[in-house]
Image 1 (cartoon, one colour):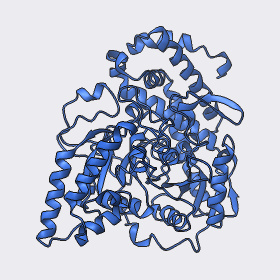
Image 2 (cartoon, chains in turn red, yellow; image 1 turned 180 degrees about the vertical axis):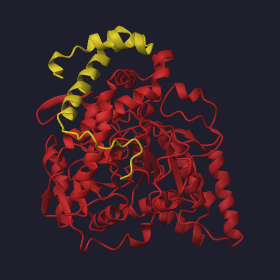
Image 3 (cartoon, rainbow over the protein chains, first blue to last red; image 1 turned 45 degrees about the vertical axis):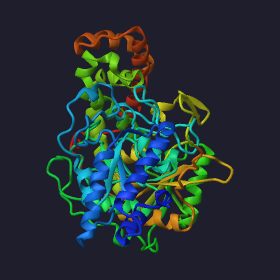
Image 4 (cartoon, each protein chain N blue to C red; image 1 turned 90 degrees about the vertical axis):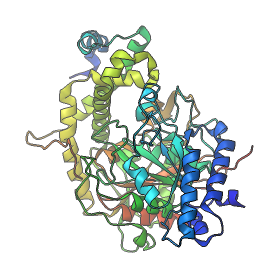
Amino acid sequence: MTDEILDGSAAAIANTVKTGAASALEIARAALARIEARNGALGAFTDVTADRALAKAEAIDAARARGEKLGPLVGAPFAVKNLFDVGGLPTRAGSKINRERRPAAKDAFLVTQLEKAGAVLVGALNMGEYAYDFTGENSHDGPSRNPHDLGWMSGGSSGGSGSAVAGGLAPITLGSDTNGSIRVPSSFCGVFGLKPTYGRLSRAGTFPFVASLDHLGPLARSVADLALAYDAMLGRDDADAAQADIAAVAVSPSLNQGIAGLRIAKLGGYFTRSAEPSALAAVDAVAKALKAERMVELAKAERARAAAYLITMVEGGALHLQRLKTRAADFDPDVRDRLIAGAMLPGAWVAQAQKFRGMFRERALALFQEVDVLLAPATPCRAPRIGQKMIVLDGKEMLARPNIGLFTQPISFIGLPVVAAPLWTEGEKLPIAVQIIAPPWREDLALRAARVLEEEGVARAPVAKWEP
Amino acid sequence: MNSNEFDPEALIAAMAPLLGLTLTAESRAEVALHLKIAAEQAKLLLSAHVEDDAEPAPVFRP
């Protein structure tokens, strides 16, 4: 019975613990047993923090026995991409090199925030090396696999985060998203993902990739869980210099307000080219459910993507230059050679890209005078097979690794908040997600729209059928 | 610039010693491929008109 609870939401698990229907310790043991049983096939976890989880669960049960107030996520298991600091573990960030680092002295800010809300950390998750990845593959730890079909990609770079949620190993995981690394696994694995506004959630205690573009956020199987996790993680943290000094508003209270009065439109132009029919059909289905009849243009999106691409190469190359000089053979070759190329690019390109960023932001803000929410594909296609190097888009064969994120990159480039909502088509074994994009600091709008889709059964995130 | 005239091998030959990088032959070919892709992206970016006084966004406030 306790095992079945793990297929439900974090909110439902918390309710079970609050009412005493199950203890936090029972939940933690069941979660650890499930990870033990399934992770060999999925490759989602790289570290399981069993002792820590059991100790935390026991402390929760003791607090409940004393009549203390319990948090909104009490007893709910969660896990984090292994670029988050977890006290006692080296923060490997998907790499071989980093696992030689000293264990982290303390947890990342967001881990602490979730634990304050009562959630129970059960481990750290597989990811593409140094987060430069859209596939979920990792040459050191093996791929994290798509729980809906193990031969297909989980998506990256937060591949383990998507795999763990879709595989029923944890109801909530945390990932990072520089160019799409939460939204791509959400699309491939069929889970909800939230990339908040740039500067909203503290990144302190995580291994960086591209400081100009790095975001952190949750993945979950319900929109309410995304909202609960987001609310729990809000909080001022001076340790992240990019965190904005803008008051945060909790999103859970407004989650069920619906979409009445919201102006919702599909993004046309760039966001309809190079997409497979399945991606466009998903956007159409969402638009129909949200009564979005307009199509609008976000001009110069292709250039925005180019700018994000170059900033990523240059900042990534600079971040890793010393390691590239001394430890080149210890990198994942697919990641290494992109980083080396990035280190060689002209500074003028990235300076121009940062200037263009401000201009593109102004365009987007002008568009948000006309609309409240924008819709676009999350990925141009469903998950490719693990190991697949090339994809065909718009009749052109291109490298899969750099191009899976071509619809996510222009959006994160200017830090807009996005919910990725997964859709399923009858007869298809794999899902595909749609980006629900809101103005800066309006995560609430994207989540409200996603909640409507969930209520109407248009978007959903089932646990993958498990066949031992 | 015209990416058709771009010679990634020449850039690698010039930059690798400057950066202190030693590349294997296999790595060199992949780096050249990524430089070509970057040059195509840069061509696209640089085709956008950017005002001289446009503010860059190193710490970005949406």
